[in-house]
Amino acid sequence: VGPPGTGKTSSARALSRWFALPLLEVKLSMIISAYLGETSKNIDNVFMLAKKLNPCILFIDEFDFVAKSRAADDHGAIKRAVNTLLKAVDDISLVEDGVLLIAATNYPQLLDHAAWRRFDNVMNFVVPDEEMRRRIFEKILEKVDATLDLAELARLTDRYTGSDLRIVVREAVLNALLQDRKKITQADLIRAIEQFGRRNSDYRQGAGADSSKPNPTIYDRQ
Image (cartoon, rainbow, N blue to C red; front, side):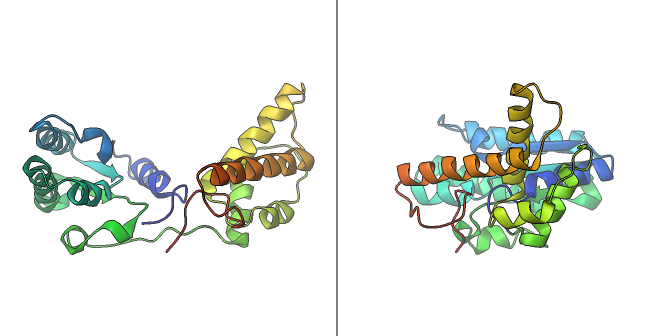
């Protein structure tokens, strides 16, 4: 549970690597179909595939789509599809089926008790604080041959997510390559941070959001 870019999907992939298990990654919005009966069939197919791959990890992203679908449409087929999903979640078992089920949502407030009670544990992913951002930069840049002030970079990226920081580093590297340089500098990273902040500020203004907020990530926590 947490804002976009805070590491939910990355954590599922890390678990997969750590335990050497196949990862079946599914975005719930992609299996919802406009055709009558197709959504329930897609859901059944996903869970059947997970059981065939056992032992494995089944990662369902955008789980809040259950609530959105249920709230947006009273059509009987949608209700049946949601019930099919919730029943499949109930029936899948790590012990009996060899499937570890993980679900992720950016919008926990949309999920009701019927969805929450299907899961034994809830892990919260938060926007990293300054020290955590410094450590993320340290990890991302550990193989970079450059003298960098990571503390300054962490101070300049207030409320950036881990995903945001990776984008900043990637853009700094790209800009250096475009200038025919093989090494990045502190100035490259600061420039990339400024460009990222301006770009997201423009996005927020275009979307009608409050541009006075410093958060570059398009997510407002409740």
